[in-house]
Length: 82
Image (tube, rainbow, N blue to C red):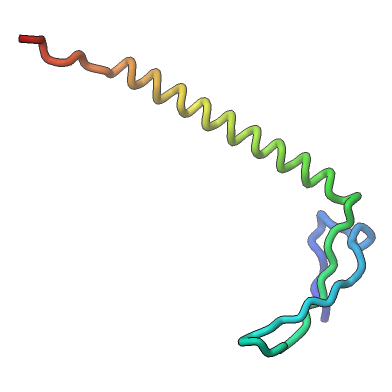
């Protein structure tokens, strides 16, 4: 039984089957049959990845700002000079 693609990728958006040899110690032991998404299926994935990266950058900036504010709030002055 062949594995079915994930629900986010329909068989119509997959490209042709590519045969990739599987080698172990220089000996071909099998062949992987791979169907990758066509270029027309990629814009949604690229948009999603861009949104995730933007959210990660925003969360990192918010964390840096919170740590800076807490550092300023709880900072203690050094001992008095001589």
